[in-house]
Amino acid sequence: MTDEPEYGDGTGPAQPAPAEPGSEPRGIDLARRALEEARAAARASGKAVGQGRASPRKGGVRALRRRSGWSGARPDERDPQRLSNLAGALAKSRGWSGKVAEGMVFGRWASVVGEDVAAHANPVSLTDGVLSIQAESTAWATQLRMLQSQILAKINAAVGQGVVTSLKISGPAAPSWRKGERHIRGRGPRDTYG
Image (cartoon, one colour):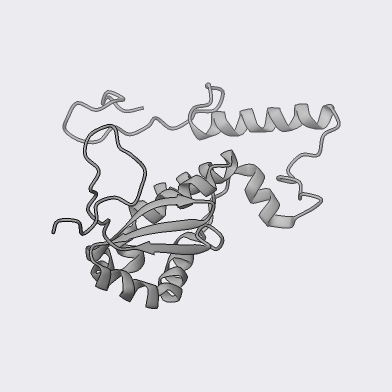
C-alpha cells in the first residue's frame, strides 16, 4: 500500500486500494458476489436463472413495452398531450360532446364562417339543430340566405355533422310601436293622421 491517504490530499485524484487476497471485497467485486449468491438462491428454489425476462405469450415486444413502461420513438398515451385533445376526450367520456359542439359554434363563429360574414351577422340561438342568425341589415340577411348551404357546410366541417341541421336567418328587428307595460291587441297604429 502507499503512504497517500485513500481519499487524496488535494494534490491528485485518490486511487482505490487494490483488493488483497483474504480481505473484504469492495466495489464491483462485492456486487458480483451478491449477484452470484442471489442466483444460487434462485436455483435452489427451482427458478430459471440467467434467462432474462420471459417473453410474453401474446402481443410480442409491443405488449411487453406496454406492460413494462418502455418508451419508444413513436408517440403514445404517456407523452404530453394537447389540452384540447384532453378536454375533448373528457367531454366525450362524460357525454358533454353535444353541448361542447354547440358552444364551439358560438365561441369560434368568426373562424367557422369567416371574418367577413362574422362582421355582419351573429348567431343568436341553437335549438334542436336550428341555428338562428341575426344579420345587421336586410341586404346581409338576403345574402346569407343565398349562401345558406355553404355556411351550413362550413359549420358542419368545423363542429361535426348533426350539430346544426338548418339555419334561420333574420334581418334586423323592426321598431316596435309598443310603449309601456300594457297594450291592446290589434292592428296597431295606422295611417289615420289626416
